[in-house]
Length: 157
Image 1 (cartoon, rainbow, N blue to C red):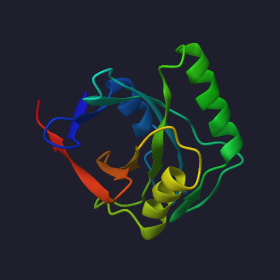
Image 2: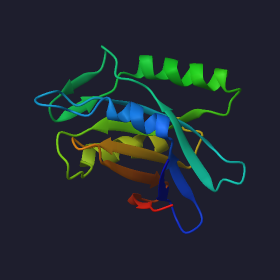
Image 3: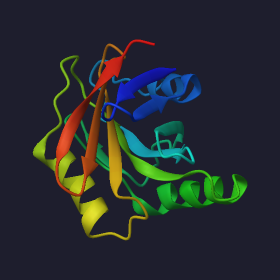
């Protein structure tokens, strides 16, 4: 399990299963970016957020080598299925996509998407997360709350 510090007390965890699934979409050669939504749950004490699954890219997404625009319909279907299957424990917690580089930096569009989803769309949470997957399997993890966007640093466990 990969562990990232949200702050001194809270952590963001990517399960091994979710990480392995993300790695299946690493861009190779001249492949287009791919992405989807992060699905997960929050512990009762609110000290940990887990990524338990991701949605997979759909044929309705739009993408190129350096951009990805997720189609809402297929992702929402996956969110609803996981919500029902988990009796309301698993929900949408953010977005993921690939970049065709190893040195990962979110674009302004990447940051704006989380901001829009948090402030404009009806998001049930006060924060959202972003994972960007690099060509070497590395991850950039970002966190957006009501005030700002920040990178989360991996913790050694």
